[in-house]
Length: 497
Ligand code: NAD
Image 1 (cartoon, rainbow, N blue to C red):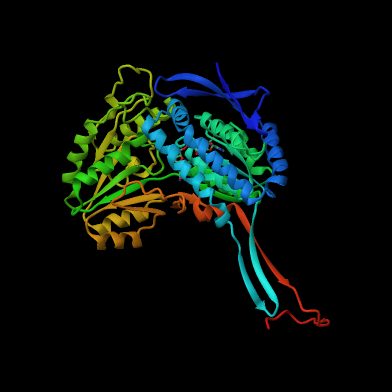
Image 2: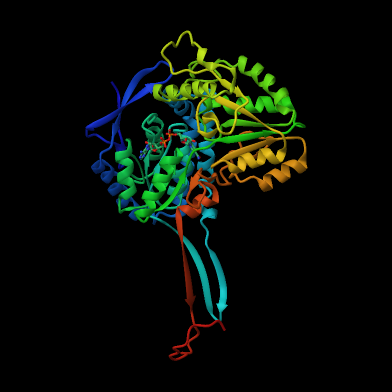
């Protein structure tokens, strides 16, 4: 059986690993490869390689770094179908969705190609007589990224292109459930001319992550994953003196006001809830239907759900693929059982789905609950599967109060034809990313991505200008080039003249 190994110092790591994990094809249920799990000493090798590479990479000209990024951009564009296929084979998402993932990652690479402008400092002449002050942005050194299973290509691309463009070297620890895309992209970056050690990939689990968190040569950690792990990463990383941004889980609500276009809202809700089998941090998992909206909306959603085609992501007719593995399938099914037991109305039951030619795949059909109450487990927990709930609110005020009470605050959406209501909502809602008649408001690469509250630990969002600030530190320089007159000794505190 194939073993997926680390990528260290610009090449595949050759020594065998003592520990490894299974990589499944979620559509067939079969183990298709083993992935090596890095020990602390393997992580150390990757960090040492990154530290060595950092000495010259931080001094590489902006022109050189930019040219390599442009070449990488071309290679990712060219190899999009191969990357997408790796995503489908290991994650399960359908081909169109996988291609979309690569495109959104590519946008961050394109943003990073503009590093010449993004990393400019500032200059003030004559802050005092013949004294100038200016600031420069310098890389941090070696930084690490730890990423989740649900976007194995895009989420790492939220991090390493920009970190590397800023002059850092990067050690990536991708999800052990779908590790191949990270290696493939590291190879493409090397082909684009990236020197060995500037980007390394170590695979593994908590053992590898813990070594990264405590390693003295790592200056900063970017993390994306579930909330409990994000909190652990933030607390442990900062305790070891590192700069940390840790993006966590989500429970994204979509308010539908009674004046909304219900056909549009039903299309948006079904697309945003069941795309990628609900395994998106920006998936809509709760509809808050205000007033008369629910009675119109629920039948329209049920009708659309009935037509969704679930199957192997490689088949062109499939619109929704399987869940990532058996453990996750069982967990999500368990939530559906619990929702029924707690008294919510199961309008569409995906538990009965059979995919004829893939009997052992990790499939669950789309599930829709109505009459979900805020005290139910299916309201409170992040389910991260194809399970959408509808809860009813009498008024807009009741709806927004419910959202603002929720501990998660990643994304939110409102559907309405009332501009005033939408404007009031964008002002009042306590969530990091807001959609107005847009169900999945993932910001473009030149705006930063990040939630509030339990959806992000740290004070920088990811990519965009926040990303440049996270991956650099500012140095302010005050200089005097005086005329030849010597002013003599003056022990007074410097004052501006
Ligand atoms: P996860 O938290 O289980 O794993 C994320 C990473 O942390 C993986 O690389 C994993 O190996 C590592 N990890 C897991 N357990 C660990 C532990 N005990 N100690 C140290 N490291 C550990 O998340 P996941 O299941 O891979 O991904 C799904 C989650 O990610 C969902 O909660 C989803 O909302 C979230 N997510 C958030 C965003 C965002 O932008 N906020 C984006 C994508 C996914």
